[in-house]
Image 1 (cartoon, rainbow, N blue to C red):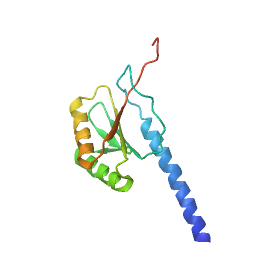
Image 2 (tube, rainbow, N blue to C red):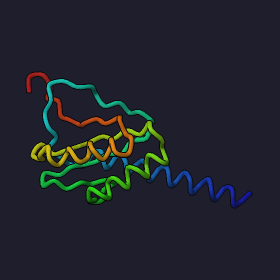
Image 3 (cartoon, rainbow, N blue to C red):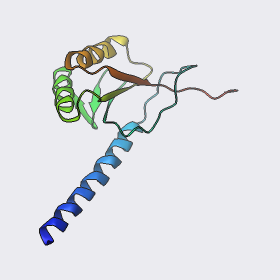
Length: 127
């Protein structure tokens, strides 16, 4: 019975730490592009990968800088684990070029991910 309790505690710690890291990644300081329309973010329990694109064109996944080839590998691994319902959320700095975002979209289609969204900043009325 004791080993089972140890396993349960380890699972609880893993879930708490991973959820904390996921929230921290989505709150990374980026100067998001402005948009006048769009849907509000919904806390969906579906599996999600957040890709942050910095102003200098760097890609960050899980808080680590990755190359384009590494991104394809990571997305492929996540599709194998989470299935085709995986969502990719792209958070890009306003200063980043589309030339940086295009390969991300191509990587998603290459591994079979069709649920892709962009994080934007929607100014409040009167701002």
